[in-house]
Amino acid sequence: MLRGMATVSYWADDPKAAHAWYRELLGIEPYFQRPDPENPAYVEFRLGDYQAELGIIDARFAPPGAAAGPGGAVLYWHVDDVEDALSRVLTMGATAHEPLTDRGTGFITASVIDPFGNILGLMYNPHYLEMLEATGRS
Figure 1 (cartoon, rainbow, N blue to C red):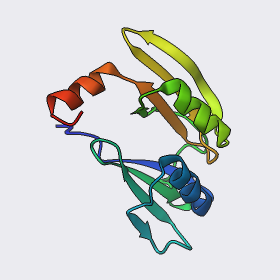
Figure 2: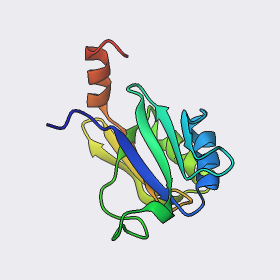
Figure 3: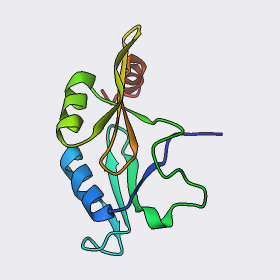
């Protein structure tokens, strides 16, 4: 039934600033923007080994009842070095949410709140790397 993550959406009261922050963090330009780069209401990046989609959406378009602050599920993005990634996002203005945590058997996690109020999870996940290797993408 579930075949893979298609898009994760982060809400931002200032989508232009969020666009710039994520562009700097990711080191890439978005592949899709609406209505235009100067007035983005929606910005989408494709990133990572499977070209996952990260969407930045103007908070005015959040569905009714959406949390006004961090909450709910945490999406963890695989990174090669959680400590380095955590240090980088904190330097860029994110705030700590969950500290660097060794979960055992090679799993390490941390999470932050981006400057726009979204939880950004970071994880070193050996199973992710095993799947890459099994699909020939390592």
